[in-house]
Image (cartoon, rainbow, N blue to C red; front, top):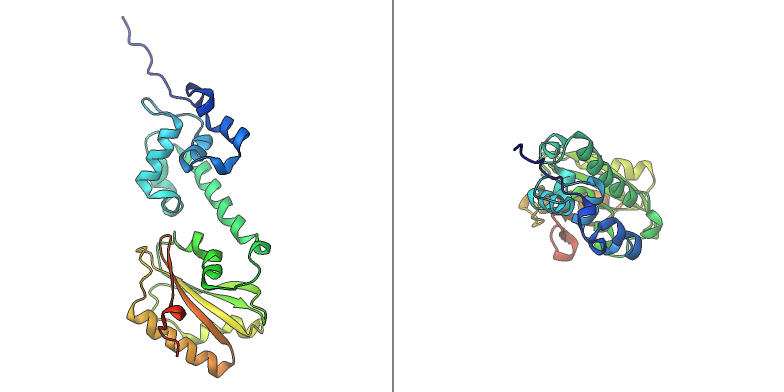
Length: 234
């Protein structure tokens, strides 16, 4: 007798009250877990796993949404049950989320604290595989004018040209800025080089009449304000 075909585990196999799409319709997307939201994108699971379980496996494999954002699409589509189309759907959804944070300045038009500044860039910068240094340009009321990438590589006093940090500020006539860079390791603890380059930024800002309000180091789900810690600022 021939073997019966291996069943594919679909969202419809779940009880109606557990189906992500139905839960989203009745409770709103904010009520769903990350795995359930991914399951809606995937639509079907694989033998032995429904779509929610596949979503949970992906989150565990890559270390959450930030890891999925960081992972090359080739690695994502090589996962069991994830082909080219599903990998593209997941990547596209995460990218839309990233762009939404960039297109919503009305939600955070003014920087009142280090946390406000970190919130503007943390979602994206925590997922970067190299160190990137950016400046958030501010007007006299601390409204964000722009966020400009200055450099990527190793952020240290011998590599970063201090003048490059202030070029965009001078061009935009911005009286103040906040320096931000990420630690791909996920640990935002400032290094001695971070402190040294901060000191150089602050001194140059005084000469150029551009106020360096802070230097933030972005890690995985955390950040450090060198200004708050008194590192490089005097």
